[in-house]
Image (cartoon, rainbow, N blue to C red; front, side, top):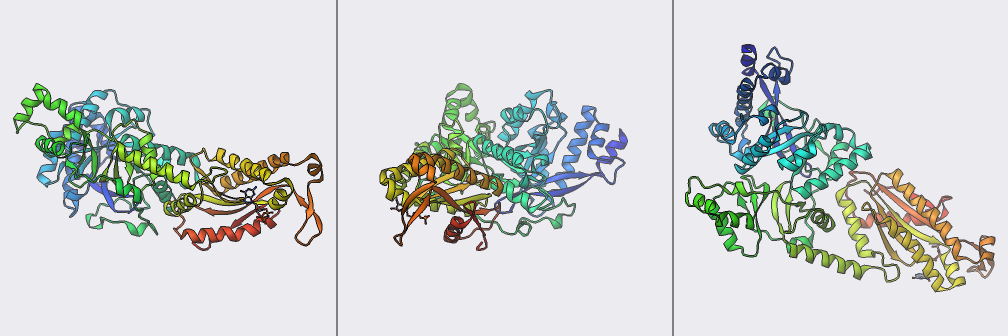
Length: 575
Ligand SMILES: Nc1nc2c(ncn2[C@@H]2O[C@H](COP(=O)(O)OP(=O)(O)OP(=O)(O)O)[C@@H](O)[C@H]2O)c(=O)[nH]1
């Protein structure tokens, strides 16, 4: 036992950055113990040797103290965040407390918001109650919690519900090679959606290559950590605040203009502010049902609901506590998670985040975790209504599909987000002859037939369908090229077969219409079909002008008509 205790002092620490996926600016560092100078193979072996809870607590406090003490020497320590791992047995007993944490931080002049305790779901917890209470107490003091190794254990979703962490760190087994694995992509993407509904942020762990980095960014992970960004280092002088050199090109999104106009940028409360300040906030903002709460670094921590605070204030107990300034709780005690959307996301993404939650009181917008503003229910309704009106105005009168304004917006989104997407221009073949022979009403039926087919597909959230005009249609499929091409081939095959039902039996038998061509000679115009000019944009494609994309697709239209399979894949050489 003494050997183990002596070894604690010889543990060194390495620090690995956790960066914003959008800007590569550092959000925090994880402290990783290095046991080389001890007789123990790993920190886990050492802690096992001390598994008697009392010694475990002594050992863990000493380890934490050393991790914090070393990190405090880093010049930017106070303005960033240290993520620390603790043995999960400590969360079960009463060994860990906000007071202990404060005692560790105070001598190093670090604020409570500088620490984030990681709770691993690798180890099965027996006593949840202490953990839930503890996480509430920590958050009331402005400290943070993260669920670590998410996805590896049995209890992840339970922990997520009960602990209400600030971060979920997605285990590296979900991240490794994610760029080429659609099942991993589906899981991570849904988890990020959940994160924004429930009000926590996601960290992708174990990002080892550029492709995986771009993929986790496109799927909506807020932060990333891994060898591709930086290996852990024991040398503080090697830590920096910005790791932009790791990824070739990062594009910062801009807030949608409609969102910007409706956003309420009310000044947030600090979790450490007094309840008197909160009272003043609600007096000054009588229309707001909530107050946004941030930590010292301006990071959105959650919200305080007016009715929570008012019912506390009107209770005898609350009044008594508030009268005594020394013992009155701080704002942090009332903070609750709230739905958050990415401030630079599209209007659709923001509305979807809102719809996915049960929130009846609007949504917070954040950029890289930093508070940006609040969209009230009224603002969200306005946004949805304006969007619906603009879609209706732009829609094609015959097919009711979105028109060219929506297409331009889609193209701009595609080039901005960099998610793997294929876009296609469809153009009917031999439509003029069909129209001339069967008349415009039948021509309209053919157009409706095709429109219904692609509308059906566009019920999927990863497919967007639109009508350019006449016999030209547009499709954007968020998928890898192989899958997108299959969808396009299926559309062609189905339309070819459905359209034959529009012909008379004689024409069907003949394989088309006999009509005069532009030189006055009779010739056979084959049955209606549709050709497609396709452009694949792999994940992480650098942004390029939407006019370039349109030009490339137009070039492909003629090639597609000549291609035996009716499809021409055009190169993305412009970008
Ligand atoms: N019924 C109907 N016809 C339309 C509509 N809009 C355009 N058209 C007709 O669609 C035809 C389009 O001409 P083209 O693009 O040369 O038709 P095509 O025979 O398919 O020729 P390619 O595209 O070169 O294969 C013309 O006859 C237009 O009058 C519409 O809303 N309804």
